[in-house]
Structure formats: structure tokens, C-alpha cells
Image 1 (tube, rainbow, N blue to C red):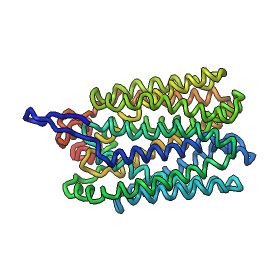
Image 2 (image 1 turned 90 degrees about the vertical axis):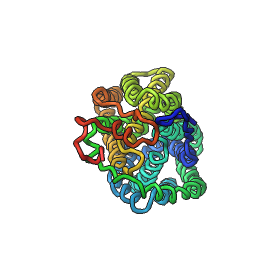
Image 3 (image 1 turned 45 degrees about the vertical axis):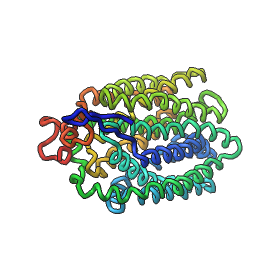
Image 4 (image 1 turned 90 degrees about the horizontal axis):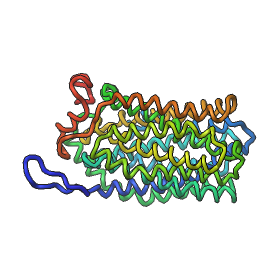
Length: 430
């Protein structure tokens, strides 16, 4: 809860985070637990089919590839049928495809099933983020997106630890548990979110025209967010999942359970700074935590492949996670500033998601090739360099934190663009 002074008076307006956002946060937590169960298991499970490192990385990339290709369609589905139906159907598709992975008998079956999971994943991701942006009060966007990301990260702390134990029992068990967790989310969150259909429809009556990707692309902060999202997808959703388990097991000679510990330590670092980054982004601006986070993440990730001591590797993973946690909430809040709270931003959000998916596609494959040809140090060093490129874009990006009281559309417009930053009449300025 936060108190915001009303414009032109000494009164205050008490803002609370809407109940539906807490539902999204809880759903994110359960979804992430399931994803964390599968993450340390998937590369090792794929290798059990007698394939190489690049082939194992491809199973991680195919999920992101389908998300990338299906993202524009997901935006249209959300616009046509609404956020809640897309959320429920998307999670159901992921539940079915993930459960079926436990029964895969050949490598190609895993590829197909993970691809189907990518279709459902992009549907519930776009719909959940769309709901989050439209429901969060303007001056609490950083905090709301931080809570949402924290739900994912706390789940990623619990998930890999449990997944490591399940792996000792069976490499197929984590897929079944993940599918069961998604069924629980659909059964509980679906009805709780369904009541927002009427609320969003009412808001649509006074909504601005939809934000367009081309118009948002005219804003330098949105461009910086795209590059940072690409770097985040490359490192966090790609290389971390595809190479860290293999590096820990094959290069460092640790047992399979250590792969889950390494991923959980990274997630713990994320969680340690996410709750700080959100409120900081709302008070001080989107740029400061993003700049610091990208710099820390780049250095810590770049040195991972050079470490041979397991404890030092865990320490560097913790620092890398902390850097990544500083980036997520302010970056998401900046995208929300560009879209505004009274317009649907399906295509803008789809483009933002696609940049992360593109990084998650290219990152594991390129890093996998580098690991096989030049070694793990080169693979992690290149990953750190990608984050440095994103840092260069954010150095030049303007601040988007709205200066006006919450709910002031003019204040949002001023936060999004200046006369020289966005073309007059563009969809970003509306």
C-alpha cells in the first residue's frame, strides 16, 4: 500500500495492489516451482538419449523458438478472446505437453513436445503480463512487476532443489510433478481471475487506441529494453538452463544434484534484489538499478566458465543472480511506461517477449557450439559480453518514471516520450 498526494489538494489517495495481481504472483510461484523441477533435469535427460551437448541445448532452444514464432499470434488471441481465457488455455497446453515428456521414448519426441509447450507458454506469458500492466497503479509498476518476478524466482529456488532430489529417483518424475502443479494453477487461479473480464471490458470503454510495436520502437528506452531482454533470455533462460547443469556435472565432476543447487543459488541471488529493485525503480527511476544490474550480471556471468572450485562457482552464480534481479522490475516497468495503463499493448509486449525468446534460442546453441569447440570459458565469456552490449543501450536511454500523480494520463505521456524522442503522432505517444 502507498499513499499518493492528490493533485491540487492536501488529501491523499491510498493505493493498494489489486487482488488479481496477488493471484498472478501466486500463480507465478507455482509455475516456477514446476519449471525449476524440470530445468536441472532436462539437459541430463536429453543426454540419456545418447546425443551431444549441442543437441541437448537444442531441446532448450526449441521451446523458445516456438514461443518466438507464436508470440504475434498470442497477442492477437489475447486481444480477441481476453487475457483470462488465453491464460487458462496456455497453461493447459503446457501441462499436457510437459506431462507427456515423461513418456518420451525418442529424442525427436522431446523436441515436438517441448515445441508444443512453447505455444502454451507464450499464451499465458503475454496474457499475464498484459493483466499485470493494466491492473498495477502507475506509481507502483516497479513494485508490482517486482512481486511478479519474485514469485517466479522464489519458485525457482524451491524447484531445482526438489528437482535434484527427484532426479535421483527418476529423470522422468520432474515432468509429471510440473504438469500436476500447472493443473493446480488452472483450477485455482482461473476462477479467481475470471472476474476481471468485466473489469477490463469496462476499462476498454475509455481506453486509448492500442499501442503499436512500430510506435514503441521509436522510443529509445523501449529499444534498450528489447536489447536487455535479449541478453536476459540468452543468459537466464538459455545458457543458465542449458550449460550450467552440464558444466557442473561434466566439467567440474559434481553429482547431478549439484546442478539443481547451482540453479537454486542463482535464483536466490535474484530473489535477494528483486524486492529492492521494484520500489527503487518507483522512487528513483528505471535507469539506475538497470545500469548497475547489467554491469554486475555481465562480469559475474563472464567469469563462471573459468572457475573450478564448486564454492567459488556458487558464489559467482549468486552475484550473477543478484545482478539479474536488479534488471527485471525496472525493465518491465519501463515497458509499461511506454505502453501506458489505458491501452492494450499486445504487440508491444509480444515484441518484448520475442526479444527474450530470441536470446534464449541463439544463446544455448551458440554457447553450446563454443563449449564444444573452444571450451566452457569462451561460452560464458560471450554471454557476459552480450550483457555489456545491453548496458551500452541503457546508458543512452532516457528515464520513463512518470512524474505526475497516479492515474494522470498526461504525466504518463510525458514520461514516455519527449518531442525529440518519439515521432509526433506515433502510437507510442498516442
